[in-house]
Every structure is written in structure tokens, then in C-alpha cells.
Length: 424
Ligand SMILES: NC(=O)c1ccc[n+]([C@@H]2O[C@H](COP(=O)([O-])OP(=O)(O)OC[C@H]3O[C@@H](n4cnc5c(N)ncnc54)[C@H](O)[C@@H]3O)[C@@H](O)[C@H]2O)c1
Image (cartoon, protein in one colour):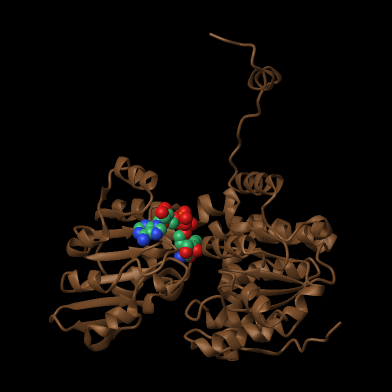
């Protein structure tokens, strides 16, 4: 097995390591489910001898995940899954204090971002752990020779799962992958409540804007969009939803939101938030139609939800009045403010999701990794859901940690629910 120099990795400033460790330990106090899994992993070592290449947002919560995997016997090397989402102190702590070589610097350019992915690929991982599928696509397109020794991967987010399904459809998915995003204990809570709260946190930290009295346009009414829209409404904003799916649009309308096409919404919104996972959802003509001073950001996986090239083409000058705010002065004389270069606002300008929700997401990741290590020989090159028993266990452990009891069906109820003979 290759020997990895544990001090290797590429982080911004190793002197931040103590600060990072304190933050990791703080987050751990809100992650009781992952803590139990870490304890179990420490005894059972389900990942002994498995090299994991992880391409995840380098945050305090991710740190606790990789420490649980390490306790389970895995060797892990970590890089960022977004150029702006890294917490530099956490990256330093992982490299310096926890023997996790980490390659991630907040604000790294695209070339450095991919250089860091290559550093992880160079460790010849047996398993990938991705947030957005960049690691799998890099290995598939450039390092095919590694596939023979690989057993599979896990994927954290909606956009990554969409890309993996596209690979499977084209017959190029290189190994089995578990769609962690699709676990109910992941997307029902992380995407909805996590993105809902942390997106607002990112906007407020970047701008200090008051939501009350403003019109907020939420593009996309999926799991994330529902969370964002409901929380923005709770802060007193008027909320407009844009959608392409008639069912989601209808749901938004019945939840009490105004629904209209983006071309209409562009004219009346004060703050725009995209969470679609789609491309150029806000395009040049929409930027052009916006009110003077409009604020635009994205909380979907890739920054191409905003057509920034089209915006730049109609921009005469640009300045940065605050960190994470680019004020574009347009040919029309109006100003449009784009936050965090269109990258995930919650992870760029704030700290991402709170740890208590990532507790469930990463409990799924950890258990999915162990499941993969134990079962990969029987799995095909397909995208698999997280096994139901894992999802149910995560929910039960979280309820127990929250000291919430629920009822158990009586034998009579079990019989009733499984029979067809009782009628009117
Ligand atoms: N910021 C975060 O921390 C975070 C967390 C989880 C997921 N995500 C990302 O957020 C994105 C959305 O995830 P989700 O789980 O809500 O997905 P989802 O599939 O549940 O919802 C996406 C919604 O966007 C709609 N949509 C697509 N194109 C559109 C368009 N042009 N205009 C308006 N609506 C459109 C779809 O119809 C769908 O209802 C993905 O990119 C995902 O990876 C980000």
C-alpha cells in the first residue's frame, strides 16, 4: 500500500489549525448520530484498508465525517468540491491535527481546484465520496487505469446524482455509486431546512439586507427551493416562485406563493435566489430587466445557474463594495449586485448547513461507505439508493438523540394495516 505523508496537503495557512480544531469540536457537539457511528466504526473497523478519495465542501461538518471514516479504518485524502466553500482553518486542522491530508484553499482558481482533485486521485482511491460528481468524472475521463482497483462511490448532492444517472444512461458509469442525496433523512432535511436557513445566512452575512418588505424571487421549488421560500416568507418578504415543472409550480401556488415566469419576476424582484440545478436560469435579458440595486445569488450546485458571461457583456464597470458582493454597473445605468460570484451562497459567504442537519446527511454517508465496502462485489455499475434500513436507522438515532419517543403499532394495528378484508 502506498505510504502517504500525513503532513502533505495544500492548505492556506497551517497556523489556523488550532482555531479549526476548536470549530470542528464545536460542530461535533451537534452531531450525536455521527458520533455514535464513529464509536461503532472504532470498534468494528468496517473500512479497514479502504482508501477513500473525498471531494466535499471542507467544513466543520465534513471534518467530523472524515474523522468517523478514519475511525472506521479508512485512509482518506480530501479536496474541496467548490472553489469558494473551504473553511481554511478547518483544512489546516485536518492536515495538521487529524492526519487527513487536505487540498483546499478558499478562493482557489479553477486550475488549482482541479490540481487539488488530481492530488486526491493520485492516492489511487478505492472509493470516491463526491459532492457534485467532479471526482468520478475526473477519474473516468483522465484516470481510467485506476478503475480496476476501485469498488465504488457515494454522492452527496442532487446535481451529482443527476450527472451519475446521465453517466449510467450512456453506459459509462465506472462503478456502483450510492446516491446519498436520495436518502429521505438527507434531502428532506438537509436540502430543505439546511439550505433554507443557510442560504439566508449567506445573503445576510454578505449584504446585511432586511428581508421584510422586499420581494424575493426563488427560482426552483424542489427540496431546496421549498425550504428557502418558506423561510424567506417567515422573515416578512413577499415571495415569488419560478418553476418549469407544473406540479411544483402548483404546489408553490397552493403554498401561498406568487408563481410567474422569470422574465416577469425579473422586473419586480429585489433579491433573486436560484436553487434549480439547471443552466442559465437567470440570463442576460433577465439581468437587464432587473430593478436598480437588485441582489442576485445562487444556492444550487454550480454557478452557471446565472449567466454571468451575459451579465459581464452588458457591464460597463464592476466594483466590490463588500466581500462577496460584485456590483455590476450596467450600460443602462442600473446596478445589479451578484453575490459570491454566483457560487453556493450559503457555503461561500456563510458556513453552509448547521451541523445538526449535516449529522443526518453524513450519518448516511458514513453508513453508505461501510455498506459499499461490505457489498461491492454484488453490486452492478449502477446508481443505487441508500438501503432503507440505513435511512430508518438514521431517523431512529436522530429521534433518540432529540429525546423524542414515538408510538409502536399494536399487533392488531399491524394486522389491520396488512389486510384487505376490513371494509366499510
Ligand atoms: N446550497 C446547498 O448547500 C445545497 C444543498 C443541497 C442541494 N443543493 C443543490 O441545489 C440544487 C437544487 O437541489 P434540490 O434538491 O432542490 O433539487 P430538486 O430537483 O428537488 O429541485 C430543483 C427544482 O428546480 C426546478 N427547475 C429546474 N429548472 C428550472 C428553471 N429553469 N427555472 C425554475 N425552476 C427550475 C425543477 O423543476 C425542480 O423543481 C442542486 O444543484 C443541488 O445539488 C445545494
